[in-house]
Length: 190
Image (tube, rainbow, N blue to C red; front, top):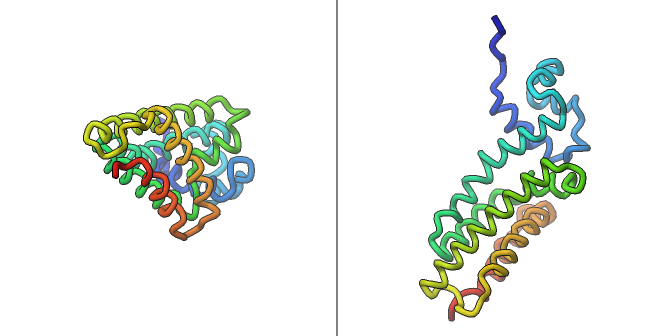
């Protein structure tokens, strides 16, 4: 009979997020991953097979546990309120540390199709949710009638990526909150 694992896989994946945020994929050495996740090397390779497969599971865990609830705020589709709620939550999430998914896209997106696919799916999901919110906001006269919804949604999606990178540089300042207000202000009806 196989032995029961002596570790909590979800906790291991959560701990690994911090290691990957701090060092990136290529900078995260196996000894530190093993030490900070309370894994042993043999167990690691039995569970994941490789560092790359480990990354994919960490990314999936990150998407499910950390980004999905934030995107869910946008997908509530309450018009401009949902857009503000999304950016408020996202800025809190990335403040001082960035976004693991965006970091991995930046580091590995050209070379790793699986990372690129996860990133593309996430960004497409954001853009569709932004379009829905902007359509509702336009119907309720919360945003100007003359804006192009698709291009504005693409712009907002692009800002999400930039915020993730800038969050590392901005640290614990209010720069991203100020940028959010500057970004969304011109969309509103007068």
